[in-house]
Image (cartoon, rainbow, N blue to C red; front, side, top):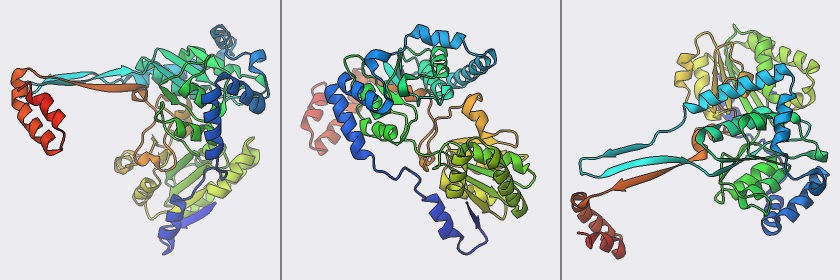
Amino acid sequence: MIRLSTADTSFPAAFAALVDARREADSDVTRDVAAILRRVRDEGDAALRAYTQDFDRHDLDSSGWSVPLAECAAAFEALDPTLRTALELAATRIRAYHEKQRPEDSAFTDDAGVRLGARWRPVDAAGIYVPGGRAAYPSTLLMNAIPAKVAGVERLVVATPTPDGFINPLVLAAAHLAGADEVWRIGGAQAIAALAWGTDRIARVDVVTGPGNAWVAEAKRQVYGVVGIDMVAGPSEIVVVADGANDPAWIAADLLSQAEHDVTTQSILFTESPAFADAVVAAVERQLVELPTGKTARIAWEANGAIVLVRDLEEAIPLVDALAPEHVEIAVDDPQPLFDKLRHAGSAFLGRHTPEAIGDYVAGPNHVLPTGRRARFASGLGVTDFMKRTSFLQLDPAALALLGPATVALATAEGLPAHAQSVALRL
């Protein structure tokens, strides 16, 4: 964990290094992923069967290629009532938030008599990738599947790896609650290939979303254009802007809430109080000792964690913008003035009582967010990621007479005589 201070003359260079730090996996997986994609595209189900045997150690013909929807419903009914209620609360709030994102069609007639507008329609099919195995990510399934259903996607396909044939019942329960139409026991880059190109068993989709390891992320990058994707996501990150009036234990827990994800996670605290910074560092150390995920969190904190001392919290905001983090907490009594100045963040958590973890589960906004400074130009997953917009226009003879001559002139100037002729003939 590094400590920086804006008062130091070396700060600009040290902070630039922090901003540009590369935290992706060291191994170059591009070539391996390309080979997997090519084999699945060429061999279809045979390649999926072979890769599943190699990577997940079970035979799809024996364990089953897909999970019957009745099994998903049974998993939901068998949940502990407290967990089922929590899952239902999350689904309700996620759905309510995303329903407000649905775009409306538009149409109008301008002064030239031209009727113009745009029509929104969902994609026909969406594929949701959900990390699997003994770790359960029902929240990820809900965050990906519910916006797709709100958009109106008719065919929702879930792909999830099942190491040794095991599939977590929480994932099945979430698939039922979200309204998944198919659940396939396929994981890794090979699942992305199957969703993108289709096989004899698995029909292709139009959009693929969902998190995964470096191979899954690279596979999504390589199939973009064959299908749409949500984003190429990297290691998680959290930035906390906090004054000295906070409880150090709260802020320490917030920093560790992301550090426990992976050893490449980045956790950064901006504060104006050196004493508070020391107290947070001490609280992190105490919590690491007791945290079941402490081994991972400690590596992440020591390798990628940072404390940045600023003269005042306003000074922190342009620095946060430079990081363009996935998550930012503004833990002060009145966070709005600082939030108003913030330009780049995947999602913001305002006030002392809004830990980032609330957003991961039940608050409503999506937790699939841009990482690696991509919040400068990208947004979190939403309803429109599963929709496309078709523009339209309609001219009558009078409108064509008004706009046609300029079109002919421009087409001719560009050396496209057929363009010009298609208008000139009507004139």
